[in-house]
Length: 538
Image (cartoon, rainbow, N blue to C red):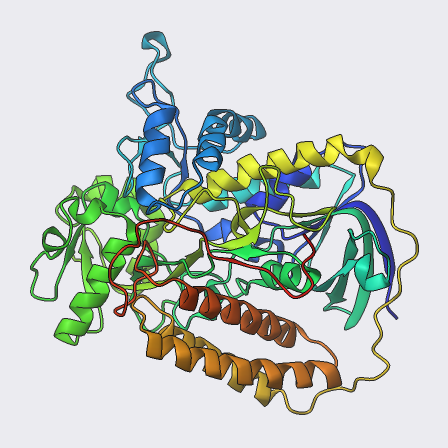
């Protein structure tokens, strides 16, 4: 039997953004944090590189801002970039205070004013400003924040809960719109429960699972973006999908990312014959921004007809490699690759969704009471291409900013009254789940083929035609059968895919991560691609 719950704040997503927000709220608020699988299934846990922040005396806020603007292809919102960077040091200090075990710099001395933590450098950055925990920063941050959340009696951590849709006042027939909570599938009972909340926060991550090859875990299905769109929120810049240049190429290595820090510490990209190729594509060579490196790899693979290229750091001392990249070293060794002796086979893979739900500086969406933070959101920070290690920083800065906004509005947002429960009276159990599996596979394949690293008008038109047919099929299936995690994710993925395709078709230029053979040049003015749903009310 379905249940009714009430919380002051409902956080959908249990990664860096969601946990940061929950931990930044006062202890008297009742907070629910939902994870659609195990708590550690999100992207945060698997992040390797680190967090970009201005921490060294030789670095400046202005330098970090300029690097971000340069990487963003003219589309970053400078106010959002400056807001994020100016709050970077305090965000890192907050993480240190929580107990995150960042790697220390043995050469630094407190007596000479040296910063005590080791900083590395990644593509697009002009300084060493990436604070990290070896090459498993995400795991260190997530484990620490989760432990802190478990100590807080007001934070309820709920696993195996899949958000189905948001509940809004307008959908309840009320004139004044606001978010009232969400319908949530409890995978343990199979029932859809009703969660009422004064404030609802989408922290569900990105949508890289829309592509056949991705570095992301299985849950990165664009759930928050799709739910916000259906609730009446605008989305922006969804044509900008970042492909990480270096994922491990091995038939048994599912979604394993080779950290960008390897290139930051001198790793070289090579063809199968051992020849370097990045100097032919960009003067920054291996340290060029990710979109340039990914396109270069894609070009060389297609030119030569090879399955992968190679990332080689074996010229560095073995002890250096093992101490700096223990996770990569151990994982590759399991597949018979000793990175101290031989190069790593790599391919590009979908990695990060730069667009998302349009929000303000507090993470507030177009619907009152509804926030979107982290990869789910579009803050204006990333522009046409996200610079390495700015994403985790965005989670902490905007998670804490959203928490402050919620605190300021506590007196203005009453608890919703009794909400209508989920109506499952007209649906039956499905005996055709093969349709879900088939549609899932078809969607991810045509998105990879037609809306990938290099695009054309014809490819996008084909993708648009296919996704509209799929949306009709999925809508019919959704209307007649009981929901499951697979069906919910497929519905959301198809919706976000359609928004990505529409956004890509609107951009008649090549900028940042959006590269099309039909419009290879930049337009003179850089403009965001903003889509508004039929239910959007200005």
